[in-house]
Length: 453
Image (cartoon, rainbow, N blue to C red):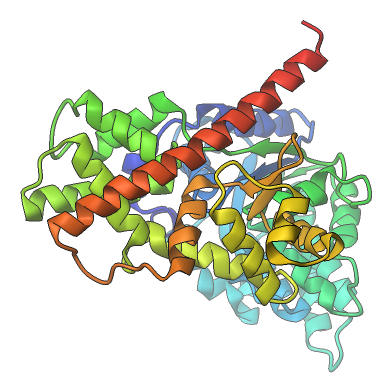
């Protein structure tokens, strides 16, 4: 199963994240001592949250590793893969737990979604645990199951297993905010409160959750009104710094050169700003352009690769940006005005105030403020300390500017056209990135000033 969810290629190119792995390891070690430390990992899509969780699994499931040598069992599930009806969620949630707890990872997890398979597996894990799973399936067989009870039973499954097996359990829930879809069922109403109630009654289980919606993750774990407030330590997974970016690029481009020229390393960090997925996409396009088009391994080739990936309809960065935009706007009320605000902001590297945006769109400030709040909630924009609004991601900002202008490369352009596009995009991108960098520096200065030396 581990190779199935964590391919060998991803394992080979895994880079750093040692701090996050150390925090995860500390949570595991504390659990072994009877101390529970729940963790929440937050960060942009494709920035590396899932990969670090899988690397943690790999290191702890290896024979002789610290995790497998102790009394701690690790389980992992990707919540978007679970059916988000209470009944379907319960079956798959328990199925994933049984799969990992049974310990035979050479099977496929789908075999544990069958009722008979779940009853058979639980029967080998002690009488108390078997009775728990039997009770759950008895409820499922009713014409109108108690959905609230089903989720209670599902969430309590690892705690029932732990004392019966003499183990402790780490439950890893990827893309945790997906669980909020269960709030749409009247019997559930507040799934986070239900989850908290189960979690607080447990003593041998630790939860590690991850999510890509930064604003939503902060509301779930940092908002005093949330049921999970102060129950989790929130860790942010951000882009790589220069050193880690260089390390990843060297791994990716080792087939072309060893060592990789310094100007190439600098150029990739410049255009990707350390985002792991952008590094991957740009590096793969560099390999393609050198191998098929006889381009030199130079900074100019990096810039061309980034431009093709960002503006080409088949580019990986292009399609990630399009996915992020479409998925984010699904959570925003209305369509026309949010897109109008995004188009206006995309043309302004320095950001814009609420008054400036409202004046540009000829709309009341109150209506625009509401739209900006929605866009901030889905992580497309953020409000800076100077009260201006801007994109969180400079690459997305540049992509949106070109996307709404109608520019889209459907094939390989001529060298002259490509060179002109590269020159234009680099100028725009540097303006955006520099403005965001200056805004961040301003925030850091204000923070340091608040500490009074």
